[in-house]
Amino acid sequence: MLLSKTQRLIGLSVAIAALILFFVMRSSPLPVDSGLVKRGPLQVTLDGEGVTRVNERFVIAAPVTGKLLRISLEEGDTVKKGSVVASVLPAELDARSYSEASSRAGSARAALDEAVARQRRVGLVLEQAERRLARYQNLYREGAVAKESFELAENEADIAKKEADQARSGVQAARFNLAALQATVDRQVGGKAVTVLAPVDGRVLKIHEKSERLITAGAPLVEIGDPSAIELVIDVLSSDAIMVKQGSRVLVTNWGGDKELQGVVKTVEPAAFNKVSALGIEEKRVNIVAVLATNEPLLGDNFRVQASIVLREAPSVLQVPVSTLFRGKNGWHIFVIENGKAVDRSVTLGMRGTWQAEVLTGVSEGQRVVVHPSNELKDGMAVMVQE
Image 1 (cartoon, rainbow, N blue to C red):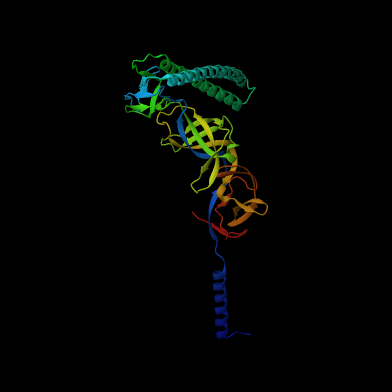
Image 2: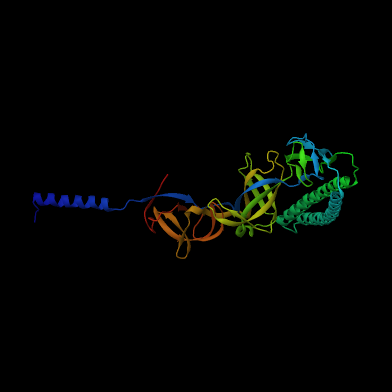
């Protein structure tokens, strides 16, 4: 039966309308950003803000009560060990003041004995660390120990040497303090000024009292230290501090210079303290003290730095951007792009850094994955990778 012209037009119109409706109703691919599954080095770091401080800081105090003569030094000046940094014209001593001065001299003598004992103790630790370093060096050359063990022994020897230098300077400071206090006890009335001497070579970091005025014994006058011997103090949450070990590598960035500085953790302080965060939350924090591998002359005392403490690292692991991961019913998941569609895959993670995460199972090297997957994205949905 032949169709009439009107029927043929109606049929053609219906077919065209159905075709138009099909293309209109068909869902268009969802635009997505993509990343690549690749191999490369990965570090797990603990990031924190810290400040620099002079490792061996000496606060020189007034040994006697009296009149401070004007200090001629300026902050930043270089001083030599034994040079005069301040002079105090003591008041005449009555019986009570003489007794107090004698007691302070006795206390300074005991402090000197304690400093000498500490120097001997630290010296023994240094000798043991140097012997251990020499033994590990021979074993490392023979391939009997790992490089990490040799480097740890080397770091321990360096730290012990710095502590020995600090103990030696502490003995000198205690001797100068005793000499100043003993001079007050032994002096004859006559208005002779008591000179305050620099215990070590260094630079003037801060002058507490510069102008001529009356001061009491023990009042801080000048702070002296070596700006080249600085350490870093990084405060982190106490829950994170337990992951940090002595000898861990430290990377210093955002300190103002062009290069990244290297260091090692010297110690994790055993006591936490309270600190209010920028959000007004009181937190328990712990100071991590680190030393730089090389001196950086541009850094001074109390400079701000940004530091990353390396907790774990590997030279080559399969990894994906952290922004590709999302939580599913049975752990971590990821969307893999296959034939223009997003395929939901369950993955097993290893190390997880700030920007990249190690993937143990679930994906292969070279695959494309969806970055920042939205709630609209479902398994099997067509996607279009945005350039």
